[in-house]
Structures are given as structure tokens and as C-alpha cells.
Image 1 (cartoon, one colour):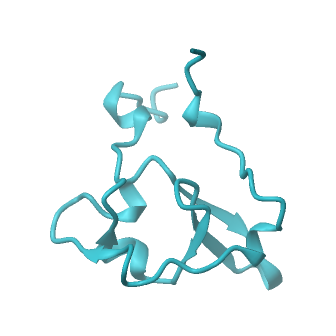
Image 2 (tube, rainbow, N blue to C red; image 1 turned 90 degrees about the vertical axis):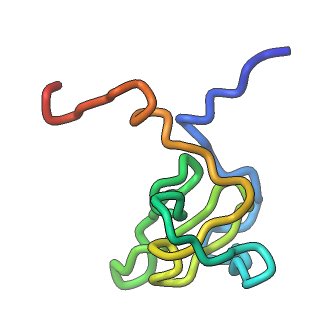
Length: 92
């Protein structure tokens, strides 16, 4: 079995990212810790229409409503791989 390099995730849906469905309350739950969408390895942001960023979850291949990425997470939350390896971009 070949390991999946999840640091370079590419969308596998054929639809454009803007056409992805929205994550709903059945998937996202309130989180009172650092384990929120924004700190998840699957969280990405993409340029959208009019320069407004689209927040996405590559695990669920869905959009995240603005602000939800700061206070919610799902059961698939995974720590960011760069943080686990003590990656410090300011030193590079």
C-alpha cells in the first residue's frame, strides 16, 4: 500500500471548489479547544469570486461557512503535520 501524501491534497471532486456542498451542523460541532477547523490538516482556503476566500475541508470535500472554522470541528480533525514536526517558517 502506497502512503498518501496528505500535505499536498488536491480536490478529487470534478466540480469546481465553489460548487462543493456546505458542511452542516450534523458534521460540525462546537469546539472549546484548539481543535477547530482552522487548525486541522484538511483545512484550506482558496480564492473565490471577487477575491473573497472560500474556506474548505478537503476531508469532506465541502465548504465551511465564514466564522465556523474558528469555533467548530468534526470527528475527522487531524493535527497539522507541519506543527507536529516543529516546522517554523520564520526560520527557513
